[in-house]
Image (tube, rainbow, N blue to C red):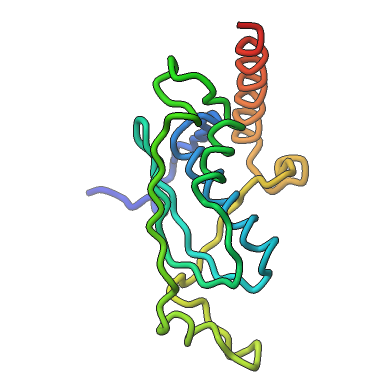
Length: 171
């Protein structure tokens, strides 16, 4: 008879961290940069933006409703450069990577769920309930919002990324 995770007397806790050049982290940085740029121009922007990456290509897709205009391809390239992909010999770089942007206006059905004159009547569109811990220009582990093991792994990766950039600058 197998027990569920919650019923098991023992469990294994693991933590995973990835470097800033990892495709998942790169995609998060691109999506965040687009969101930040849109909100800077139009604080009422509605942004459901996802990013995908493969060798030589970044794809930005989603539904966005805003009065702002931002050059998403430039934001992609700037973010790829900031992460450290600066040379074609790495197999991926900001100057030669392809960018595809496929964004449309947000569905009226979703807008209906979030448009309300009374805050208590406001919904979450199609997002449902989501809870996530993200580090954004701060160290969550210093405030106890991140497990110690994960914070340790993140610290090692931050130092590794810094070292890699210093070595790259010397080449």
